[in-house]
Length: 422
Image (cartoon, rainbow, N blue to C red):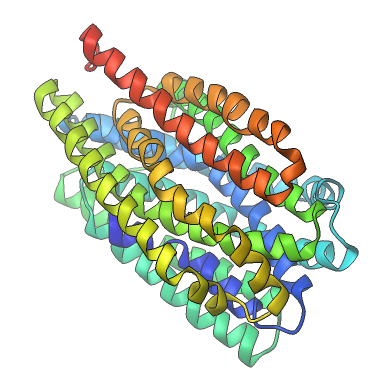
């Protein structure tokens, strides 16, 4: 799980590195704005993976193959429906990028170019979330690793071909990611089919009924709200950064890739926790459930400390690897200390997100996010607005810390009440 998730940010890192070595900062700022807008939409759909992992893990614990098939089909149906909706909303979304960012015309043009291509990868990207969630729930850890490794190899090769060799610029980076998403979908379907055969799950398709999707819809609603608030905070980082100038926007784009690297590495542990906690809940074994939580927290702490040390020692070299524009490098170095602090501050929210996904307690995740976004992000930002970009990074640090604290508190509350398995 850690290896597969650690390679996910390479999609963004490679795009940033290739574009970051073009002649002007507006290319890097444009791809930052366009890629961030796509990421907001696709990460909003992360409820598809989360809900799929939790319910599949519990159904596996109960050894209910009919329920496994029904839940999988319902999740795929929801993913395709959501993807079609995003494509139909493309004109409104392109307008929103221009209106909300306040960036220069050159930056907005590059962002809209990237977005108008990448949006057509929505069906593949969203179905991949469901297929990934299914593999995680089935405890098939190698599947996601093969899938993400394959996706990134395709993306890296095509990025170099389209941007460096063909000189397609930002459009080339968008086409590379789109083709990588559809290539991954083909591989993911093959991997999932093997799981169906191994566990003797019938591979016959039909449209799910409303009764079959009702539980998923309820679960997805709360996780969607949670994801919406999360992306609101991250989008605010990008769009407010655009108002501070294209150099600040480009610098934040580089540093946010560092944060994504941290998040996906810790999510590797969290994904394993989702599967193990969900399976333990399906078996109604509280002792094993609590054991997996303790193990996850231990390894999360180890990796958080390693990341902090890594950024503190080679952070400047990583920035220079991603861009050679002097103004962007100097600006990013000013805010590097925040990235050194964030892995330790954010560890709890990543690990306990995984625990609560496995428990399928979406309301607790939603309530934690509501509280943390308001009091942990926007309030600190308002109080430190005069700090400008430092205020943004301070708000992000408070946000991550409060998310973890509220989830840890709720987990111990469930333990005291004896309601973990309900």
